[in-house]
Amino acid sequence: MAKDVAVQKHAAMPEHTPRVPLRGWIGPMLIITLLAALLGTMYLGYTSDPEKNLHDFPIALVNQDVGDVVNGKTVNIGDQITAALTQKIPSDKVDLSVVGINEAHTRLQEGRAYGAIVIPGDFTKRLNILAASAVVPGDVEQPIITVETNPRAGTYASQIMSRITDQALGQVNATVGAQLTDQVQAQLKPPPGAAPTELVGAARLQLATPIDVVTTPYRPLGSGTGQGLSAFFYTVILLLAGFSSSLLIHAMIDNVLGYVPAEYGPWYRHLPPVAISRWRTLLVKWGIAALTAPLVSGVFLGIALLLDMPIDLKLPLFLYGALAVAAVSITGLSILAAFGTVGLIVNMVLFVVLGLPSSSGTVPIEATPRFIARLADFEPMHQIYLAVRALLFFDGHLESGLGHGLWMTLFGLAVGLLLGFVVTHAYDLRGLYRLGVPHRTETAVVE
Image (cartoon, rainbow, N blue to C red; front, side, top):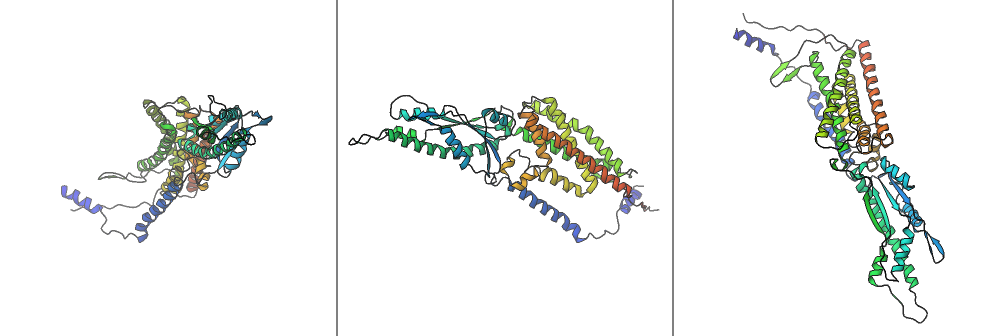
């Protein structure tokens, strides 16, 4: 009996191995090389020189200076600085908007500005007091310009904001200092025949850089937020969960239905195929994806809370997380149903390769090459990031990205459902069923 079994196992192996065409060996190498080229272009392209790629970087400029009277004339240095910044900061790189303080703070609260430059109401008056102190001894405070960064909109965006303002306000400080020095020097001009009076060293140094530029975060983030990166990584796990679940559900359900084999180490299983249409197969996969998504979102939320991650809007984050995972998974399953094995590559490119560079979770969209920035209009990861960031850092305001992210996630889900419905019905109507031509398997038996 043991001999019969052994022979049957041997007989089940093909006697002649068919020749594999050359393209069968070269194909994987070519696809991987092309994928590597795309990965290199996307990932290295958006990190190589973000500040060189700046475009439309939103900054608010607030001028509250009321001016002062100098030698009988009304002077407003704040207006002069506003005009200088508007002219000197390149408009093709930075979107500098002159707004009021309330509008500036609204933009910061909604993540529509990466920072604000605030000139206080007594700016000119303090400059005049500083100039007078160079002639008349006394205690004096430097006039202040405040740079408010927005760490909730992105850590790297705050760094870019600081570098832009350091360079621009450094030039402003030098220009105002030169004007102030000339003004004081003119006041010290002696009468005819008298010896000239010069500014002492300390006064000259003080007047050379009269403005104290103070950089401070607007609504700083607390602990447990990864300095603003927690929203990005929460987005990544939501998208990867949806992406991975589409692959797993597709493979495991096809195995259960008998359309693909399963291997577990040395064990091999291939069940008889079930007579089921493509549309009904996709419906089963969609149903499992929809039931799994809330479980996955709940697991992520629970782990975040166990790790003391600050989450004020727990229920909205759970609900949106379930929606995001379901949308990515269902769309991924529809792509696999439409393209088959090629759908694996399509999903990887759509959700991962193009998604991370255009997400704006690490480098702001306004600091990426324009071709990457255009991807953010439709790439799923960017839409999910906007919604998650709004729920975690911006109190769930619709204007802070939640409304846009929610709408685009629903739109993506609708596209995925429509794609799956149309393609599977088209295949079924044309008779392109997944059942192959029946064949007979013969087993050799030794008598």
